[in-house]
Image (cartoon, rainbow, N blue to C red; front, side, top):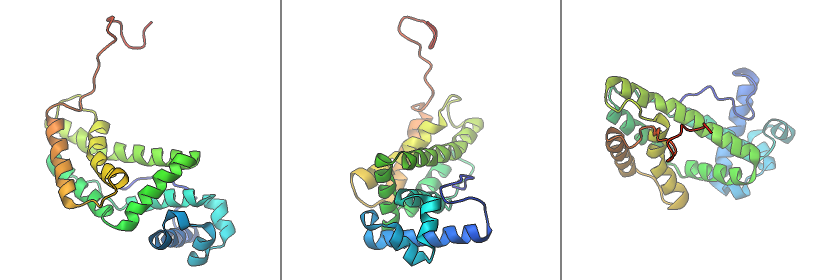
Length: 216
C-alpha cells in the first residue's frame, strides 16, 4: 500500500539520502535472511552496505529502527486494489498480503519488528503508526463499498481491515507457520460474509442507566 509515511532514516526523497537508505535497507534484508534478528548488528549492516556505522547510528539509532524502516519500505509495494466490488478488493488485498509474507525473510521481518516493539518505545510507536496508516488506507475500500450499497452504512472500515489481517498475523506470529493462498481466500471470504451481515458496524449503545456516553 503506497503511503506518505516518513520512517526512521528518511530525511528527504531522492538523491544521496534515498540511495543511502536503499543500500542500508538492502543490507538489513540480506542480514536478516542469513543471521536473523538475533544476529543483526549495526556493524554488520555497515560492512555489507558500505555505509559508515556512524551514519547508521545517527539516522536509525539502533537495529530496531532499521527493521521498522525496512518493514515500511517493503510494504509500500503492496497495492491498494480497486476492482469495483468489495469481495474482489478483499480477495486481491489478501492475495497481496499472502504474497508479501510468502517469503521467509519477510516473515522474519515482522517477527523482528514485533519483538523490537515489545522492548523499545520508539519501535512500538513506529509499529503502531505503520498499522494505523495501512488500516486507514485500506479502509478506503470499505468506504467505497458502503457508497455502493454493498455494506451497512455504519460499517467501521478499521474493524473490517483488522479482521482481514488478523489470520495472517496469527499464522505468522502465533502458529509459526507459512502463509498461503488458501489462507488468503478463506480470510477474504469470511470477512466479506461477516461485513455484509453487519458484524463490523459501529455500536452506539449507551450505558445501562440510559445516560449518553461521556455525560455524567
